[in-house]
Length: 174
Image (cartoon, rainbow, N blue to C red; front, side, top):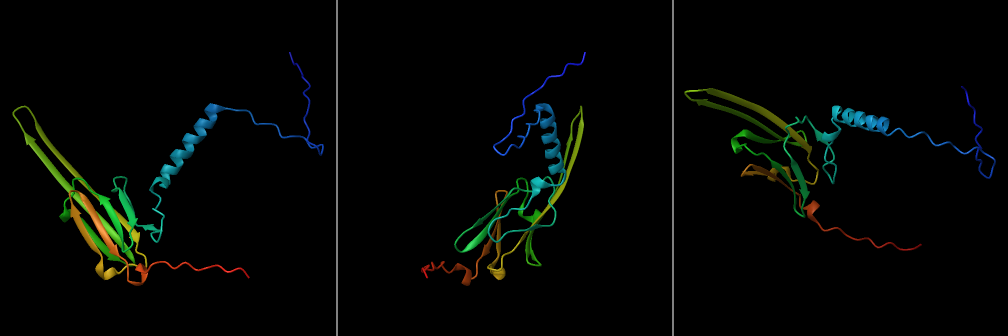
């Protein structure tokens, strides 16, 4: 049985037909959103570079197990702090290369347990590399790195010219 119903059409003041709202399909909308999120993760969107101040590009690669990194700008220096639990100072390298500061690390761990009832042998291997563009305002000759309790702190001192206080310029009306 075919049943037709006439609906009134709303028009605006210029006698134009008002747009009809699209039907709401909550499960379809949810599916599209989940698909979008998986697509972004596949493209590495969650690994996007830290964008603030002079550190505007992250080069190199970052594995999923990459370390958490904080970058802070102080009056006299930039400071990069990387959390590296389970690493030792000998496992980590910091290099200035082609205008970038490169932090790399490799961890190799083997564990072996023997007992009357069982034998356990585990191996864990992993490496990471993080790279950040070094601002022109950094004095590359004075870059310093320290490792303590699983935390790497790289200090990038600013040049004398970059440490000068900012100057407020008065705006005059013409």
